[in-house]
Amino acid sequence: MLKAIISIQWIATRTLVAALALTAFALPIISIRLGWGGATANLPLFLTELELWGLFYPVLAAVAALILAAATWMSDRRGQHVYAMLLPLPRWRYVLLRYAAGLILLAPVAVALWLGAHVATIGLDLPPGVRSYPDAIAAKFAITLLLLFGISFALASASARSIGIAIRIVGLFLAVHVAVILLAPKVNLLWITVRALAVFPGPFAPLGGRWMLIDA
Amino acid sequence: MSLAIETHGLSYRTSQDFGIEDLSIAVPAGALYGFLGPNGCGKTTTIRLLLGLLRPDAGSITLLGHRVPDQLPAALACTGVIPDRPHLHRYLTVAESLDFHRAFYPRWDPQWAAQLLEDFRLRAAQKVAGLSKGETAKLMLLLALCQRPDLLVLDEPMDGLDPVVRRDVLAALLEYVSTHGATVLVSSHLVHELERFCDWIGVMDRGRLVVELPMSEFRNGNKRIRVSTDIALDVAATPFTILARTRDAGSTETWVVRGWEPEMTGWFDRGGVTLRDVADLDLEDGFVELLRAFRTERAEGVPSC
Image 1 (cartoon, chains in turn purple, red):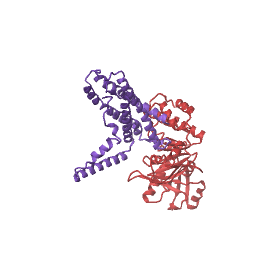
Image 2 (tube, chains in turn blue, yellow):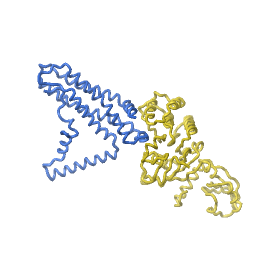
Image 3 (cartoon, rainbow over the protein chains, first blue to last red):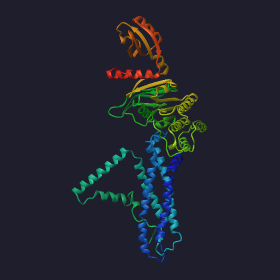
Image 4 (cartoon, rainbow over the protein chains, first blue to last red):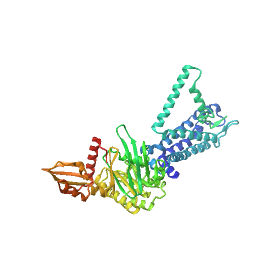
């Protein structure tokens, strides 16, 4: 069954997967090749430029996760999920199969970035104290992909009712936040929550921090 | 009599004005059950309930001995379905659709699939999105049949198809049923279509079951009779149900009756009414008169049949 789901998901998304994989492969190469002037070049400037290029990694992960999650459910949504619901398997299992297939199809994008990172850093004559981190950046990219795909997949598969409930919860939270600000201006619930989510061990921690392929 | 489909007291409200009410149907195993009713009477909603696409507000459903929705996957594993609207993945080719579908049905018959592909003149490389309405209907039937189901649930499968495609679809369906003894529940508002091959009918109107009986009983029990009478007749005293009554010229009347049996001619002799003629009613006429009588009964607050 997983093979069948992967097969139809691949047919639906192969062009997107190929384009995303190509971009993921090219990103580290371009980021290094455009700024690298050799070991004698202005290193601080190069590292600053590289840090700016680093912003593209989470953006690429977000785009890939969103596009592939949406594409995963597009056909089922068009048919109002009737085909999926008529298949002889529990619905949770179908969702799990779709999710697993989506993850498998994300793998080429992550692998392409890993390859690109290695190709970009091969043969670089790095000055002492400066190192390349192709495996680390690829791992960080893969974890970010995984995380964002999970969220996008959940949103794309959610019913209008579930999304409505989620929006109401967010709305309620914001209302509580405003009320707390008015009563105790020093307590910022929103900031506390954002920090809890975005700083390690929060679930969005991989998105933060620096994305440096080469660093001192 | 074992039942392939059984519902008890099924209720489901679709809006404030309409819903399925206390629906109890029993489809015998091996039957070709025609599910009749005018547009919007609740046939599709009932089928969606049977297939677990909707959850009933009340009542129970059993499909091939499996409770729905608790044992839905087991029920669906033995059930071929053609829903009211095409549901296939449009970006796949015909061949890819077959490959995908077969992965979920261990009883899939690849030889027959290849045969039907040829019989239906479907091109394996054609995208589903590019299929005509007739070709899509054929593909959906092919998928439903080749999984070798014990039960086929077909929601308006002939709707909008040209006669040639209808004949192809019907032939394949009947071939399967005759060789495998499967049960078929087929809904339609095309009464003549069902009359040709169904051996049971259930008629729905406004969310309720009007009648459910073997086709032979329907054919033999529903008659158009012409009578002559000079006396004021007590309609309630008749041994059959008068669905419609129209006065012709003079003292002659035409009645559409239900529950007719040949020995009832004796009642006319005793009642001072002369029976002039007894004619069969085709399914469409019987269907129309049944609905008319049902609606009159409901409007008058009389319990339905």
